[in-house]
Image 1 (cartoon, one colour):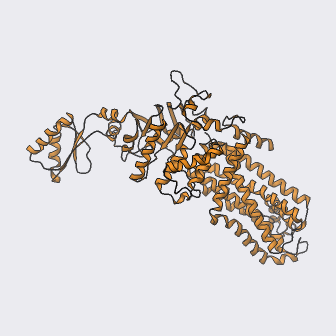
Image 2: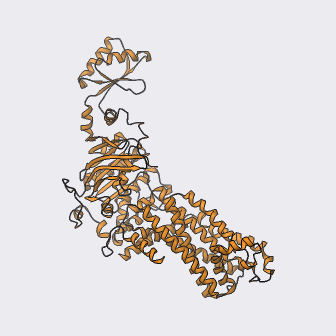
Length: 258
Length: 371
């Protein structure tokens, strides 16, 4: 039976990937926009590297962490809107009429999201290498970075799936996007927390879990092996993934009330 | 937290009641004889005979908040029968199908499909049925072959047989040439044929078709009718077909249930239902528009007035077809000229009219509160 379950997960994941590859218009923006935003920020905020205590002389290396998290936010959107579309068109009902298990359906959907998330992360690494960024943690750090990207994609993907399963509406998922972006902007994406001069912003960034996700990635690029940053980043990403998966599994059970 | 995730995940995985040791393929890859010999023990109700390929519904109710979409229906579909479920938009047809296919739990009442209770034995019901629901639920970015491969895998068709089954079905529904094209380029008829093929992948014993020909051109509709009829006649598949087309129910169905506002208002063979109405009607189109009232008065001597279409005047004849000659003579004697005179046998619309006081055409907007 486990082979059957694996095959079911694989089939749903393959469909998810096939869909994405066949509509480049939806696959390219998650790759290009974060990099474009990074380029704009790097050009405008280059001078901040002169601040005392700034961790690197290359703002590009400092900013490269952001696309990894921003790309994961796009994963939330993609996973959610795809699932919402399946609900709206009745495709989920078609799948529900087969022998597929709810867990396989969810796992397959998320496996596709994670695969895309890792592919995005590979792209950002290549962009970094191409622009001369030196990954402080070396090749091992890059592998950890890809694993982290997979975990973050899983967490945000499950969150998107949860929203889709609860609302059944692509528009609701779109509505979530600005909220997630607020979390991104009120974080340490553009400056280290200890250098943020505005008190409320520094406190908000400190309370914002997205800051620790960015700092985890940033540590591998800029600092090297930073146990505290890695523990906080992986811990928060795992917590987001666990909570989102529980919610998504619960919502899937409700949606497949068959 | 991890334990909570595991529990939820595990429940989700096993809630269908499948033993992890029993290959799913054992349940879904079968034919009628194998199913009849299956060791699964279908639920039986007191006084209701077990029918492996049949459908039994008892006092079925489905509410959506304050709206009662299905209002205590009883019905019985025999194995190998084509049952036409006829009614206007919003009558409760699709809601009934969703309940019978286990996609929607009933508010109350019971239903056995293929000998299994739709609430307590969902996996067994789903293994026995195929369904093409109201909207052809297809992924525009996948090809026809992609759809069939995915469906075959998820239905547990062994890998060795999957390719052959997919090709066979593509051939059968006339999509072999378009098999590797994305579905977004398919016509409505092609989508419906693919939808039917997907419903047949695992050789179901009962097939639910929810308005399968809505929006199709005449040629596509006729082709689909032929395939549905072949399924029932040659393969003994039980067909539960909802439709709002009178001619579809008339042409295909062995028996028809007419539903209105969530209730079955008439049930029987099309011939028997029409025989209940019994008498044909005569329709006259006056040559001069001002003669309508006089023609109506003449016709009224031979039967009861019924609503005409556009300019015609119509009565249901008291003496059946025997009265037609008298009608012609009476009109001639009164010096009334008509452009068209037609004898019409009762239709299922007449049955609907007789049972509900409304014509089926344009009778939408009923109780079905589903979005």
